[in-house]
Image (tube, rainbow, N blue to C red):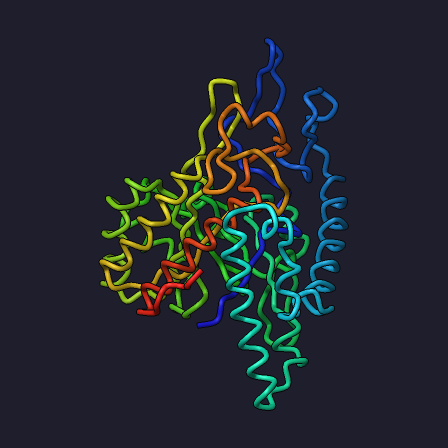
Length: 356
């Protein structure tokens, strides 16, 4: 089964915030809401909402898309470069040996294909498709980039391939649902344990009234225990009504907490536990776990605690805590999860485990 790669980039500048204001040392200012609204610096000038920032965000997004196109089609995705993609990880970590072994198996497969006459220099082996997505949050920005397709008459939000509505803005009488239901992009909606069966079915009817397969993705963010308790009834309701949706796990946003030292972080163990719960529930229900939504960076940051390789402690967070908003998995932590997912998927397909 093909894997569709969607990156939350080239457009994710607005940030949903729990509180409208932020207080430091007795001084209260408007919360930082993302670079296309105001600045992260804790000054009255930086925290003023500035619409010109949306123009800056657009230009930054366009530059990012150009870089993505270059990487996706310019040879960087060539399968023969597999060993060059994660050199630091391969050289410095224990699980790098697993990556190396997997790379050797792919090399052997490519050599075999060449030997029997298959051309491995064509686009299927050298290029990849990569799509962008972000939360549809700042409606003036999204509306400004919405265009009508002259051939089909449909409206599309050209700020991304896929847009999703967040947990805080998915109310049926909310402007975000009204906007997204009118565009032809693939859509997503995030749900937590607060979402009821009736509420979910009404959201599905609003965003995908024609029940088109692939149109709507349900992105689940609950935490492991609440997911095991709440997700089965939601799946049963969707099955009962014959609704076509794709189920995706977001194991990061439901596992965010603040340390005593004030750092906003996430636990690798909790993220892993929610992923396991997501796959377990779908296995029990006989349904398909359709994807995973992770917040990650390739940089060696210390923003999430734990990890099979990194094993970051709360005391380590201050070393390389670079995020302005949400904590991200670093490259090693993300690859830890990738190997765990690969093992789980092979087991679900009845395939033998990879011999590392």
